[in-house]
Image 1 (tube, helix red, strand yellow):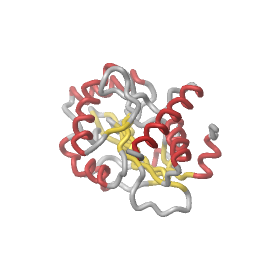
Image 2 (spheres, one colour; image 1 turned 90 degrees about the horizontal axis):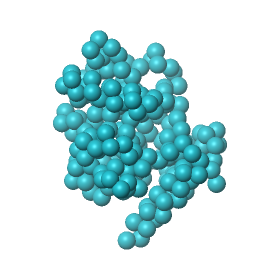
Image 3 (cartoon, helix red, strand yellow; image 1 turned 90 degrees about the vertical axis):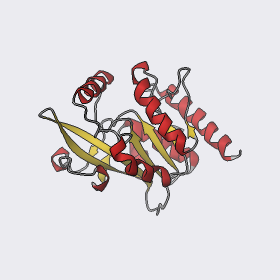
Image 4 (cartoon, helix red, strand yellow; image 1 turned 180 degrees about the horizontal axis):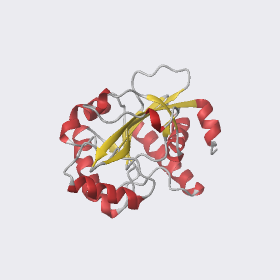
Length: 221
């Protein structure tokens, strides 16, 4: 079964924490957190914290005009209703298979980009500016990350398989592994993990099959 986005959105709601980051005179649209919840369910702890590369096309329901400019701590920004993208729909499919009620999604970078080339250019710019406010894995946001880890039953990595991200992925993995077990579909080059949404439907189904199998096997260990 491969539920459509419309079907999934009737089962799950999506919220996000969005902010604009001013860098070198330009504003960068960011999302620090996405929260997916089964409708009409109270969730005290989330079933999993997913760690991906960067936010995709998800935006606030109220539009980009409502997004505040970064002021102080990101974790103080509110969650607002959001429109899910393909990657979040795919995670809802995993939730259906696992009968989960809630997950949270963070990224190696909060900066929202549509293509990998844009991601890479942005990361180089942030490095040149010596500005790491955009990542929850920075030293200044340790408290925020620890709060996310504490309220999740599992941590699943899915930041992709591009060799260029190995430095960022290695740092994230080091921090996550120090907290506990990191799950995910490991790529041949570590610490890279297959992304949940590889665009082609049969590959999406395979990711779901393999991830479901891993999670259920781990639950019985």
